[in-house]
Image (tube, rainbow, N blue to C red; front, side, top):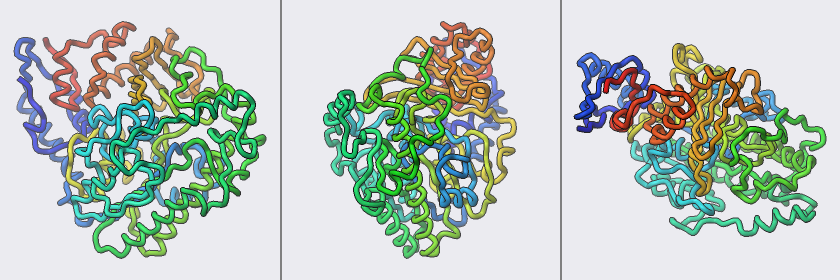
Amino acid sequence: MKFSLRQIFSTQPSSQEVAESTRNVSLVIFNQSNLLVLTASIIALLFSNFANSHSENDPQILSKKENVLVIMFDDMRFDTFSYRGGPVNTPNIDELAEQSVRFDNAMTTTGLCSPSRAAMYTGRWGHKTGLDDNVELYHSRLAELDPKEGGLLQRASDSGYLVGHVGKWHLGARGTEMRGAEIDLGHGHEPRERFTRPYTPYSKVPQVAGYYQGKTDKHGEKHEYWMTLPGDYEDTNAYKKVVHGKAMIKQAAKDERPFFGVVSFNQPHPAYRVPEPYASMFNPTELVLPKNHLAERINKPLAQGGIWWPWHDVGHMTDLDWRKSRAYYYGAIAMVDRIVGELIQTAKDEGIYDSLRIVLLGDQGSMLGEHGLYDKGPYAYDELMRMPLLIRDPSVEAKVVNRQVSMLDITPTLAHWMGLKPDGDVDGRSLIPLMKEGDKADEGRDDVALYAYEWYNGSWFGIRAIRTPKMKFVWNPGDSRDELYDLQNDPYEMNNLIDNPQYKKQLNSMAKRLEKELVRVSDPSIIMFRHHMKAKGLLTAFTHQQEFDVALNFPGLTFSHFSL
């Protein structure tokens, strides 16, 4: 006999909240009937937790629907802003940071554009939404996020919001329009017809091959890595999105309905392309490079050196080439700061800034030569996994939160602000308690972040990683080699300790944490993970298929005891 929580309860808490409430619950499964026996006290506990968690997103709880603006950038690292002590002067972002809750340890779900964006809009992992790879690109099997996944845009529209979206979507053609975006502008290079044939980088292959032959592009540049754009700032595609973003804000200011808007930019995604003065703002020869810049990958998974997109072939790059690419990235961040300043100033000019909720984020980071890597790929290094996240709520005192949070947590937070009705599983948790109370709101809670890298443009990897402030464990199911890093003593993740007997205790602890998270989010990879760990002498106490059946039927439950 199989049951679903939705058949038993009408409320829909997050899977994290359910896991927290049932941490010490003992369940009994009878091998012959698979009958799950819940005591009355357990049911009462579940009902209590569901009611509490449901109230957080109940639209009737909120007396006012807040205006919300999301400003998103592509492949924007966490560590380059001046407010973080980075090399780029970012006065506008710094000013926003001073008025916001800074989540200095925010983690994306996947270091790849489409999956990370799908996670933010839906609040669910890719194994639930079906969106676990890029869409509309060469070799990928995916063309769009399932239209049934309405996400924040559809939920806001259904709740009476004026919904606007400007710029990069990367979840399928016409997706914003289908989800109720009345303002739908600045699509850029994205196709406008559903199921368009994928972009295939035919021109990039000979271009990169030419670099090995000493050929370069205009001005002696390598345009797959850095490029000086003609004209100035106002001639860029990014500025066109700024213009559309300003128009959206002005329209929202005149509309009586509450407003939910997203302005999403391709910058600073590689190749790093900026006009002057940003192209020459940083002297490549004077840049301070990190310790792991071009570090040799020793004892690392094989896929990290794969050429999954033509520009991943970096054997032609000289030291100066790498420096120029990094310098142009820094220039792009300076331009990003100007963009943020202009959008915020428009909100001020239109008289809506004082009460405006703002979320500034990057969908993931990017590699600038660390470990000899460029752009992104199937790995879990901090330069890719970590992302910037600022959340401004005028009613909440600005502060710095050091606890790890996830891209998935943005969804329930915005749902709380806007009083949106639930639309399914919630794999993250609202950040409102941390915003109000700071790190103490998480006292007693394990500080972990889950990360996945299932596919890269049609190539499967199935990676899962778990991160604490001290350690990181990466399970690579498509490789015979996993990874373990001591982040306290090796923050640059250069020394893989997976086979170090002195770290067996830490490895076992991290494997248990990852197991718990996979069960919490009903990740089907849990079966393979447990068998891989058992082969390594870890997690030897796990039971049989029935345990996973229960995890599927009761998403979120953690099991402290099984009797078979």
